[in-house]
Amino acid sequence: QVQLVESGGGLVQTGGSLRLSCAASGSILRVNAMGWYRQAPGKQRELVAVITSGGSINYADSVKGRFTISRDNAKITVDLQMNSLKPEDTAVYYCNADVTPYYKRRRDYWGQGTQVTVSS
Image 1 (cartoon, rainbow, N blue to C red):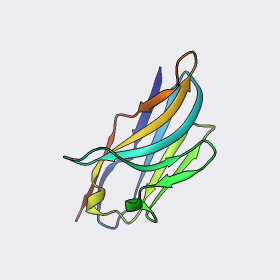
Image 2: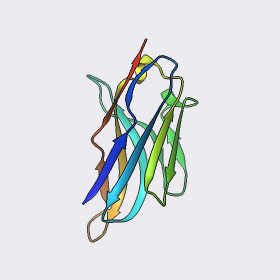
Image 3: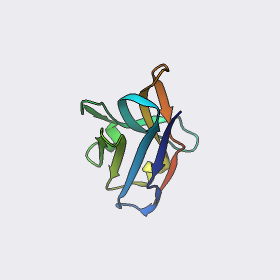
Image 4: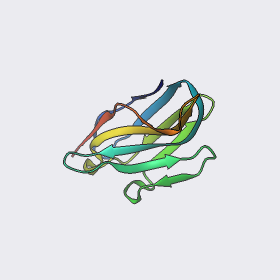
């Protein structure tokens, strides 16, 4: 089984910073893209940032210049450094990974989610 475990959420004031981390474990043959999504109350889940195994990165327009995604392929981790946080960044953040497990089909896996709250 493949698991994604997130950490690092919390409460921060406007303008503050948080760092989210996600570690993948289990019967993993290959991890392709890894990324972060978020879902605010009453809204759909949206892409925040994604990074491929080769290091190509894509950010949502709303976080460009403030958030930085990085990954460690050896440790199978992906981090999201969030700076200059705004109240509209408040959401549950989910780690996502496109994984090819051993003896199973390639598919997306999700973490359990971590709450980020930015107070004004």
